[in-house]
Length: 416
Image (cartoon, rainbow, N blue to C red; front, top):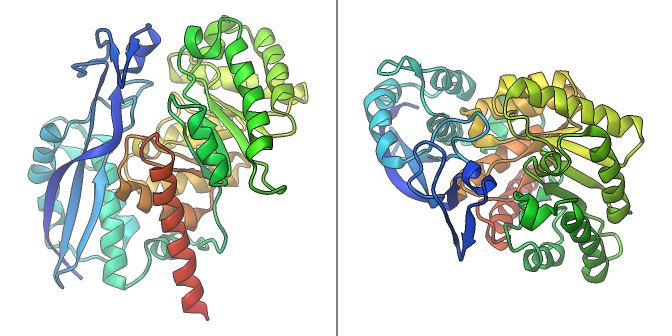
């Protein structure tokens, strides 16, 4: 099956681009936005509308395969590629990628995805933006699946030697700033992992001594107990703190460990994961800091799992953190890895090294990128996957849960 054309359309994402550095410097929340000046290059405001590009591959039999280019909410921060605006990058696809894809025979997803992921833009001498690689390789996976009349998950399993899961992958839901009302939604819908929490400011969300987060974890435990739909429901509590614990405790490991003891007690009997407890502002320092924290948590038998996120963006980064056990679990932040072939490799590598694999992403994706990520998860079986896009819970959970159920039902029907 040949590709006869590639068409692009601009789109919106399920959330916003936020200038993380400006927020950390105390930009003031103002309704659905922030007051203050942007700090990160490319931003025209602290919060601005998220943008995407839909890449549609036209096959010779008339079928249309598609994927969506999207970048994370906090673009331009933590070592990531710059702000992703559709008007800047559709011309890149049209000029450089369409000529590469038109006329190509669809034989192997892996081979063509790796080619696009490694493509060097002759105008810049650099690889194309991670968001472009992310969306284009999604479309390639869909195109190969359509040409072979297979599910996308089955194409991945066939080419990477894995098995498509016959069970549900745990879904992690994120609350945004509605960290109380949205938790109720999560519990009612029996989310496996919750609530993310968006603890990105010491003064207003963590507390100068961590007291606000401690109170919140206690509330979470009590709310789960009060609203749980059945006695067997015992979700994992997973909270992203964006380095604020390190800020509050001056990166003092001893004080952080003592604080972890308090959090463990507040969460009991639920498992607690803390994502991004410290941010050292560069990759090497971040790896060593998370390695030390992970070691100290284990040494002190504290029932908390450290999750790596910031400065662990690429497949190379993920391997580096996994090899050094810089975290009990690593978030594979899907748009940051570029080609989705790297997501597959990252999940498999973490599992091989005995490190928790969290196939994540961002609230700032689209329905399409979320659906394709479900196929990746079903073929690679990470420990959890993110409900996305958006911060409203219902929409992202629906998209991910329903796509997973479709895969399970179609495969059961074929095997009966």
